[in-house]
Image (tube, rainbow over all chains, first blue to last red; front, side, top):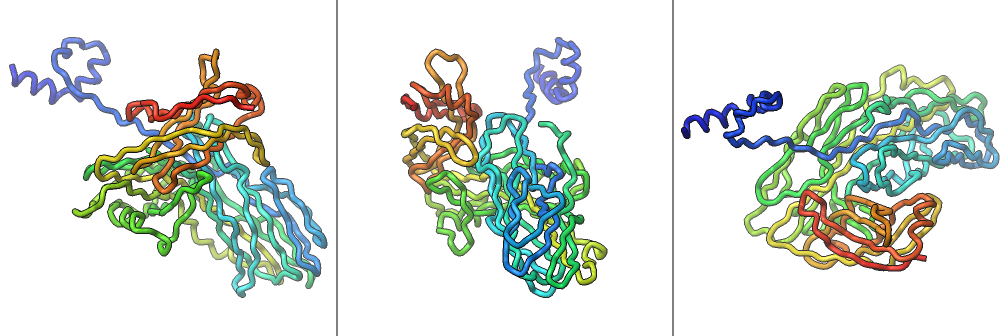
Length: 164
Length: 280
């Protein structure tokens, strides 16, 4: 008898799928079926990036601000045209779960000659209670110096979704 | 859980200057990648048993992810603020030293999950208490190709690359720890992000509290507001909780309400704290 039970338990993994189809005679053997369901989070770019558009510098320092809705405010002395956008991200997770959003406060952009520019960043939200259609945007303010030097200015900024 | 919104991340901006005193910027691609899925979203390690965290590349391109342990401290405002290695106190240093995990860097093709094994090796004489790190998952930006680095002659360009990721808490508890919590000072606040329901969540004892906030109104079957995953960590005795709410919920909340703080269902679902108050 004990041998039979052992055999039944050993084959319970196979039996599980058969039982689902209605093989009820296996019910005398008890076996644990475990499935570890994990709560997940996903963070994805929604395809839009933080873009300051086309800017013509002036002879004085100024700024270009991109709000979290993507609209730009052109500083005094600058000419701004072209498409601007904020960086957008989608977040999914378990409904009702609370997450915090944080981003670097400032990012420094440097060119190969060592010239730099800074931009300050601001996420559109600081806390999200997930409801299935969640996302946030990151806007920023670019500080443009007078007669900003030529070169490829590069910078990275980090954005994290934090679980408490 | 919609995966339809997954999109490849690319581009930032680039530009070119024309006149001597003018700069002229136009968008151009700067590479980035790193759409990701992480599960679970919170880990409590009791004793020596380890566990696994799933990291999945849900982007459209192969990406390399780095997994690191970060120290964060909860502020009175309820935010998790970064702590540099120099600022770390003994408890934080001990937490970082006892967590073992691998791999720490992984390159994944699209839709390829990877298990990150995590365990704890506590020293023999570890004092009782709660130890915590925050595990950060994020993509490493790809090196830019030569063509993208070519600068237009006499020009000016700019490329801003976002590196985005997720942090989850990893908690180790040593000894028999207790904590209680209290709720006070419920209010409706408004700032540039919109309206929020705020209150003070206090805590005493030698461990954190964690759970779900439910705000109910007499006569209504369903809670008006449910927010899961609210923690008060041992470094603070009280924190502010601010939950964003739409205007109609803000209107409905006015009057008598009951605010309840429950443990998560998978650890019993017991009531931690409950307070009744009248909101204006």
